[in-house]
Image (cartoon, rainbow, N blue to C red):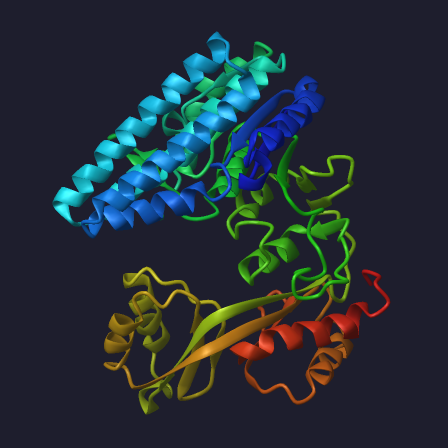
Length: 454
């Protein structure tokens, strides 16, 4: 049994959805479960119209709603023609669009965009795309069946960043998904969306959550493999938009892939790997535009390399907390990190000394409140316009040669913070934001100058 997840570009239009159907057909004999994202750009459009409506710009919001109606109708008719199946699917999707318009009107009246209402609106992308994909697959002769992800992806009630409940998801999969697979059917679900346990109120897993959904479903059914289909050939030695000669990594270890996802690699959502790791389920990253490619296999058995890839992340904020109270004081770090937990803000890189702590965050939405609370612990300095460059490899700390080469390659690039992960597979450097790109290029040339993955 395998789980196949298709991102927004893989279901972006009629041609892409038809291509996706052919990929699903080639794996149907393995027992396929399909997870799809919203059509490319739709989630952003939904969030945009929700914000417009909440500001009272109802005409603009309704215009955006009708634009989505036109786009989805056009792609449905391009896939299915003008027969009964097309008419039925268009009617179902159009009814969803009507509901979306009503929600926009309600938001304009209330003037308050809560996380719960934002989840309700942003969920429509996956709900519509999964219905259209099912109809397209059936039209191609596949035994596809739509399964409402809200019935299966059970979460807590933390709207916009919901926490999946693994045991509940496993129970729902056994009740609603596995019987279909055993009967030779292909269940199709929207990614990214779920519902709060006990209330069935729509929740979302946050941006990029469709990958996470696929991994959670894979773990729930103990799949043989999880395939993430996107618009690149797999995981590369660097972002090809920054390093044009970046090379494909044919195999990479789970922990390395997780580090790359967390530090800026765009191919995977940072949470994707975790459920698969627990059960040792291999994850493949493949290109839906070139399905004949080998892609990248993420597994425990990957070769151990000094450096596997270079990652970068822009728009990082660095926070420094200094206090003599840290010296020989128990509980200081606990109090410090409780502040970030209370404000639901994740910390990326940390470095400490006897009397100071430096750390980075990439979500500055609650920065003012965080800094206010941190001042109770000591002096606080905030440095904006920073970026992170990470050198990731399973053996980077072995012998020190790779670390020395990395620092040497940076030359005159100013490093504000340096951190080696506890597992010794990630050397992270905080630099000026505008230096992220040149730093990545220098590091890639130092380790992969001949184009080979060493």
